Image (cartoon, rainbow, N blue to C red; front, side, top):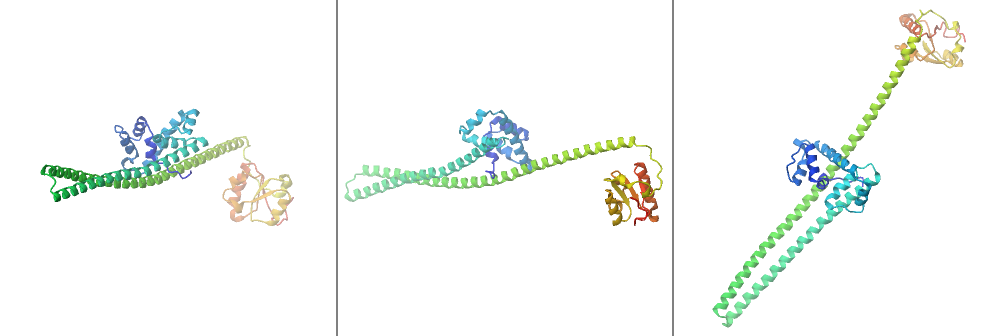
Length: 368
């Protein structure tokens, strides 16, 4: 039943006149009209806007959900027992599909499909009834034709035998005239009835074509509503994630600000070499290294349990951000980037992070 195409006109037929007027008023339509005209007014796109059909469905759903909330469990059981008029069956069925209860939604789909089947059966019953009416009229015409023929035959026979007087002849002629008029009227009635039958057939075909088209259109707009709902949920989820990230960032910034306030005044950095400190005491910590990548140094640091981060490969231009995650900074003198190394030492001093020079990255003065 996932592919049910809901027909808004059939659903609105089950609304009370007051509900239709309320719906028309919310959609800014005319309300001082007969019921069928109000329905046509509601379903007509406002000022030619095709997207207005989505708003029509939204307002229909709003009214039906409001009515659904007033129904009791006893009412649901009554509908399940089949105690619902044919004109309300479309509306009740569709209304139940808006429920959050899966059992009620399933019952709503069943009611709506049952209404569709009943409608098709009623349409199929119209043609036999009309055909039977034509058959009766044709049978009456045949009887009148036979009666006229018999009267004409009697006149001919009696004229031949010179047994009929003038008065009787005139009466028979009047009878023939009456029968001929009756026959002509019957023929006209037959023609009109056949024309009506043909018109009914054409109207049924047009209604069925329109019904199929509107089912397809309703399906499209239902898919649009579902997509819009999914997009809304997705955007709300993204917004919630962004809020959480903002809260986390705010918390981190507050923590960093507090930590910065608790730190001592930054000391003037002084040049040291890695031998001046005990690297083994930094086991399990991160060391930010400003130098060309050196396998031997990386192996020796790793043997001490120090995690080496080679800044030149990652983010040489943003040392402040990198240093905030490290416990020690190692660098190699480089005359081409003296200014950068001074900045690195200043930042390390600001964070009170040990900043040591690698005099010989080949290992000559590297003490472990």
